[in-house]
Amino acid sequence: MLKINYSKLKLECGTDEAGRGCLAGPVTAAAVILPDNFKNKILNDSKQLSEKKRDLLQPIIETEAICFGFAHVFQEEIDEINILNASILAMHKSIANLKQVPNFIIVDGNRFKPYPGIPHETIIKGDGKFLSIAAASVLAKTYRDAYMNKIHEEFPMYNWKQNKGYPTKEHREAIRKYGITKYHRKSFRLLPEQLRLKV
Image (cartoon, rainbow, N blue to C red; front, top):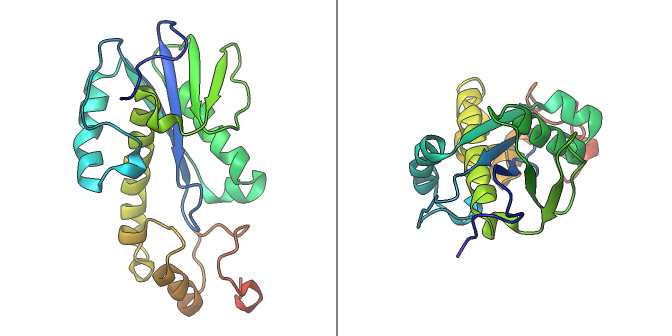
């Protein structure tokens, strides 16, 4: 059973990201403040949910949350500042996009940089423990998936609609065959035999 609150403070915000391990596209984060009486039987860590369930939950979270925010950090910036810093930056931007200022931030994982003026706690596997982090994980995933579906139309040969930019065998085969696009993360090991790839 996921808990509603970690700090016991009002306006506690949960934040999480999606797309950290992808070879293409942005890393996307979301931040969510839920009301104390929020309940949902389906909501869980987005990785445990089917795409259908995530799509069902998105409008419920957005309607019932006190507020939510999301942000993309794109591949150019990922290559510049590295994926960990880009993930934290995306979380900071999503918190900045909230309509209300939270009193406390709970973060999925164990790495975060302090957000100005607001205390925080990192929680390993937090998306399976707290509703607001689970809600943020669902929004981060659905917003990122929607973006990957959009850019799939531009480069259908990589099948991002299906693999969302993750390093599947099919995605790597397409990189080997067609090379890379402007959406690929050049600082990532795009193929196991990186030297054979003409960047």
